Length: 235
Ligand code: ADE
Image (cartoon, rainbow, N blue to C red; front, top):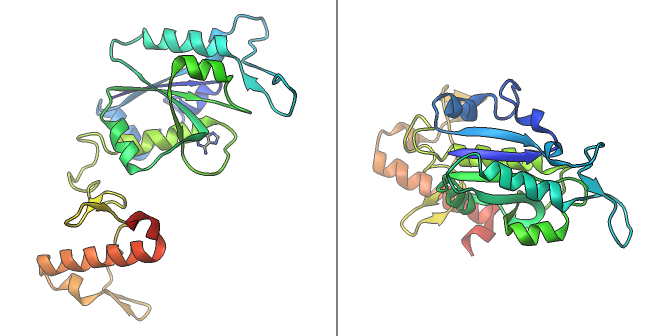
């Protein structure tokens, strides 16, 4: 799968940066040829000598608005670099909330073009003309869309076939369909060695070797946790 990121901070995605994507699962996926990403500097598509990407908002007010032309030109230039059709995504707090079902939808695409906005966001007209999917990673405001793009990429990459070592490990995560009715539940508690720690023992059932009972216990725990912590998921 190919990701393109349009940003004024391409260094955040550089291959040598040992940041969020340069280590761990995403970097292994990249090394294995299962995911690739290319960051493009929006400033390369400006036409003035100051390489201006934003300007003051009409009507006044604080902040700056990202201008239409550099974004429009960049998106078309990036799309022409690869024959796979790109799904355009703008990261914005006003977008559709990123949840596991949206992550699954995005993981099925051959290519995503992620546009990271800054300040007060993009001029509304370029959003209308590009008709991207607008995606938010949560009800809070980040300084820019780059971290949101990385969150989205990490969540998508781990779902790509072959990326996780254990074939089923993503299927057993929180928010993956679980139980007979396929509801998206929180994960169950997990334990490892030692069997007793600070006077606390591991639940007996997990040591029983009875796989049916263990599976039932885990599902019960998932239901109880979800009811307690995230009842909205059961609605
Ligand atoms: N840019 C700024 N805040 C954001 C958020 N919560 N989600 C996605 N992009 C953003």
